[in-house]
Length: 472
Image (cartoon, rainbow, N blue to C red; front, side):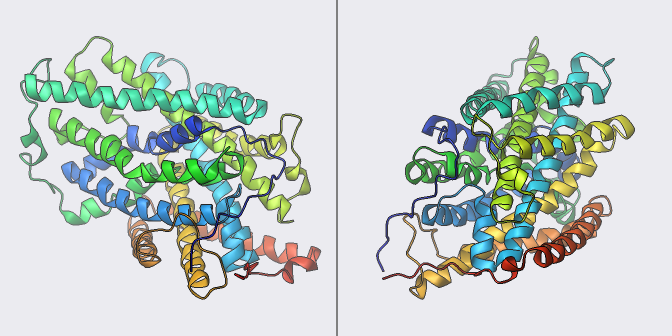
């Protein structure tokens, strides 16, 4: 069967205000967040240099997920894509669960980013309480998201530009320290740091594998490109380009950056609760370098929080359009942004401000573990939807996408098995296991919500679960 032209997405009332330049940079920035800049410190302390391999392994799986998503996006580009595909290929209940769970992921991720941003402010102003900084950032980014999607895209473009430029600069400086031996770190910097301190797997392969749940958190947001589909000017051109450049982003920004940092500074010097980038450049001793890096990681946290506000509003609007959320969330303001959904999400992100007041030392760990569990569910739904889509295409019930995933559904199965394995690791980790308790409570809440929803709206129970478009 030959590939048909992609089905046009409905207008949905959104402004198609995200150009190719902005979508590309959102895609790049989505792969660089607080999970790398801050979370890598704890992962390095647990796994040593082998953390590089863990990021590379997870990156391969993420690419499989994104190619699966890319095929679905070019089959039917629509805002709120993950929930829409789950609804189409798995049924209304899974669309309902996926939409609300992705919304929860970003609300919780927003809390994590606010916490990280507040910690970074402590670098310059230790006297300012974490909760104050978190609250200020929450209010400012809320204002940005209410204006228009063009303003969101422009702010995200420059946030991402700062992150990309900074990491490339860090790699270049690190390579200079390794090859030329300048700075305070020059005497001890060497590639042999990757294996000379108790080996590449200093705490054993098991300890390294247990970091995968933290590593996966670092990749949350790469799927944000799918949420932009309904507001991209030319999704058939910009989305494949954004997805196909993902391997290079992973190689440079994760594997490359960690290779250089762990060669310049031995892994035993890093610890949880601090950015390995700030620590490394503080040791290099370049004037103001640590402060500059701290500014960069601050923008990374704010960038991710900004993206979170954007996506939560769109996801709630998609749920409302399917009568799975209050109809107030379906309304757009005069600037064509889902203001009510964004406002409710921001209000709940404010719980992060409370956590920074009550348990500032544990706030980051709590929220990242919950966000990871929600993200894994979303990725699983993308993969299962892709498997079901490929089956429908092969059976002749659906037209083929113009951007097919290599290997068909094979790599989706590989990625799905990997994610199930990571979930098992989370269950085995006493510190991370709390997110599964939250997930169980969330599942009960969604089950009750769906039951009530069907009773109040019988049409939902009778809704066609496939919407398969026949191929003539």
